[in-house]
Picture 1: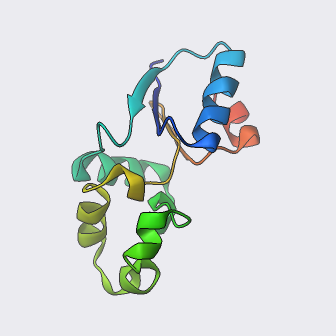
Picture 2: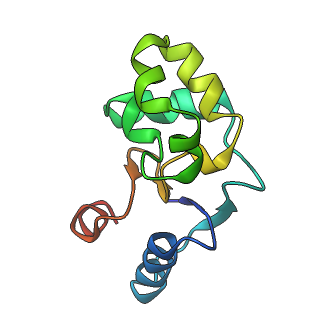
Picture 3: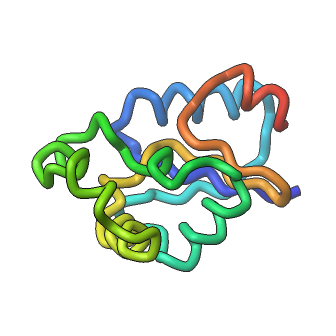
Length: 117
């Protein structure tokens, strides 16, 4: 199984997740989510695969999210508009993401990741 680990190297949660993956000897392809921002198509596919609300893919605690006032704007936006917005800047995307063949994990919650590996 090939896993994609999308992360931001300066994020402490991403680093914790990376250390966990390495300690579990999990093989993965590493992708810097700001340098290689996910496309709207990738995000839509992952969102639909995950079964999660689209809002879970937004980095709601991020500076950019707050500066843009997205808490108030997102409810008025269509899903397609939200996906397009997410694809414009990796700093808007919740991190890390772990993409497997049959699962998508958003954020690092060790118990969820343990079940998926």
